Image (tube, rainbow, N blue to C red):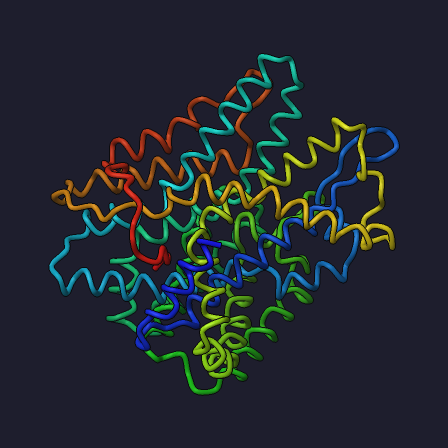
Length: 438
C-alpha cells in the first residue's frame, strides 16, 4: 500500500515536460520479458526424470513467430538511446566529465546485480558442499542469471555513448547505417565462411545500431511515416528469415544451429526497425492515456523497482521449480501447451508473483543509490569497471555460476572487482526521487 501511495504522489508531481511514453515502453517491456520468461520456460519433467526448459518456443512454430513481438530487447536499447542521449548532453552542458558521468551510470546499472550474484554464490557454495550434483547447480544458476547478459551488453553500449552520440551528431543516419553494415559483414564472415570468433563483434555493432535509433528519436529525426518504417523493418526481417540462414525465433533455441540473439545477428536490427515503427505509431494515443493519473501511477510503480524485477524474476522461478522437484515433480509432468497446462498457468503465475514481490522489497533499494558527490575519478577506473563487469557477467550468463570443479570463482569475482576498482560502490543511501532509470 505504501508503495502505491508513494507512486501516486510521484505520478501527481510529474512535470508535463517528462516523456511518459518512454517510461511506459520501458515498464511494459520489462513486464513482457518477465511474463514471457515465466510462460515460455514451460518446465517439463519427462518420464525418464529429465527436466526440460524452454519447451514452448522450441516445440511450437507459432510461438517462435510470436517472438517478433515478444523479443523486446530492441525496445530497451531504443529507449536507452533516447535516455542516454539526454543524459550525456546534460552532463556536457553542466561540465560533468566523462569519468564522473560513466561512474554514475554504472552505479545505477551494476549495484542492483551485486546482491543477486552474492545470493547465487552462497546458494551454489552450500549446494556444492551438500553434495548436490554440480550439473544441477550449473543449470539452475544459468537459468536464473540469464538476465545479466543484457546488463553486460548494455554496460558496454553505455560506455561507448560519447563516441556513438558524437558519431550520430556528426554523421547523422550514416552512423547507424555503418554499424548495421558492419553487423551484416560479421554475419557474412561467420555464417558464410564459418569463421565463428568474429560473431561476438556483433554485440557492439548490432546493439549500438539499435541504440542510435534512440538518438534519432530523441532528436525528432525518426520520420513522419512510422507505418512505413515498421513495414520496412518487417519486410527486411521476413526476407532475412525466408531467404537467409536465420531462424524464425528471435530468441535463442538450444537445438538451433543458428541463433538470432546470442550473439545478435543482423535480424535484430531489422526487428528493431519494425518495433520502432510500431512504437512510434502508438506514441500519440498512449501518451494521451498516460496523462491520466491511474495509468501513469502504474508505470511509476513498476519503474521504481524495474531492475530488481528484471534481475530476480528468474530466481523466483528456479526456486519454484526446485520446490516442485523436491515435492516429487508436482505439476511438472503436465505437457506444455496442453489444455491442462493452460488451465494451470494462472496458478503458476500467481505463485511466481507472490514469490517475486518480497524480493522487490528486499533488494529494490540497491537500484536507487544516492547521487555520487565525490570528485571525478581518473578515466581508466570506470572504464575498467565496465570491462571487468561485462566479462564476468557475460561468462556467468553463458555458463552459470558453477561447474564440475565448484564455483566459477574468477568470473564471479570480476564484477565485484570492477565496482571496487572503478569506485562505483560509494554510498548506498536510498534516493528520495522516483527511481526511474533514465
